[in-house]
Amino acid sequence: MVLAIGRKGQVSIEFILIITIALFYITTVVWPIALDSATAAEDVKGISDTKISAMKIANALNEAQSSSGDMKKTISISLPAKAIIEYDNADPNKIKFTAYVDASGGNPDEIKCNPGDTGLPPENVLLNYKCESVIDLITGAGAAFNFSGPIFKNAVVEKTGLVVSVDWST
Image 1: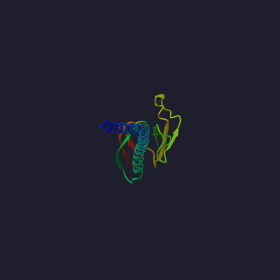
Image 2 (image 1 turned 180 degrees about the vertical axis):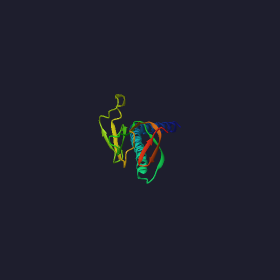
Image 3 (image 1 turned 120 degrees about the vertical axis):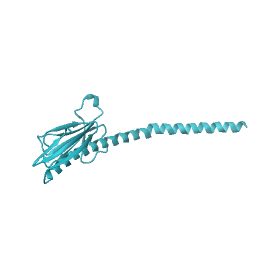
Image 4 (image 1 turned 90 degrees about the vertical axis):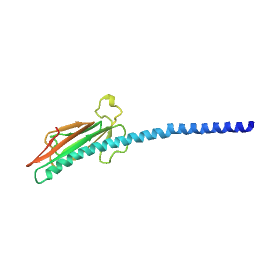
């Protein structure tokens, strides 16, 4: 009888040891890798959302310019945090978009992400990559605009005669 009780204790200790080793492995190897992957996925999503919003604006402007008659189209854009879309009349055929991220992995090929000085305040030191790209336009967008996320905005793109305009007040 004494022998059987001792064996059960050994099995319990072995079980506890195996569970302890498994938990140690999960917390030191698996968990950090999962967190890094989640951060990279969030960065790619932020860059992609910013690009999609910029493309919506560019496509609406190009569609208006290409139409043979008058037209009016409403678009909605949604910018994530730490993202900027800007249009300057100095370069009327380009919309620039920028996203600041804290990891360098997994960005779309055509978007450059550069490490180093992002021009952000010191409290954002973890945002060490500035990803930016430009979308070409057929025509200008009228008045200059600059949006920083997070933001949800509606706009009316209108062509009257030969003039294409964007009304962001809606």
